[in-house]
Length: 113
Image: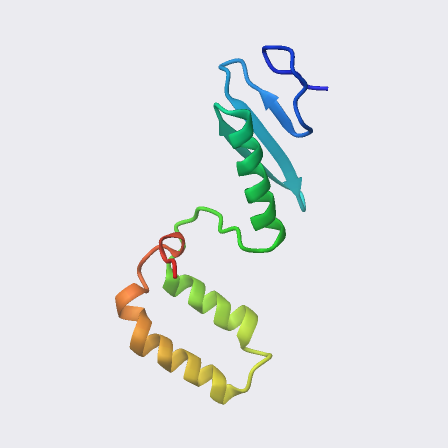
């Protein structure tokens, strides 16, 4: 059972470091995640939000992956077999015409709706 500097019990997965920061950790499919903050409530909120994003597949790991690189991966790995060749061609043409030059070189994590 973890306790903070004042002797209060801490929730599962949360500890207090020597420097006073609270650290929340969890593991999901062998990958480890951690959040830090000075406030226990804020760490709990960040931990819950991160866990939700990871479990629902909306967490985007910080990478230097460009939108162009992700589009190529998405098309080859996720779309090539399940859709017809005509649909595949339309996706490529629309991406090349409307998106590639304007947004394609941006990092994936920088592109938001």
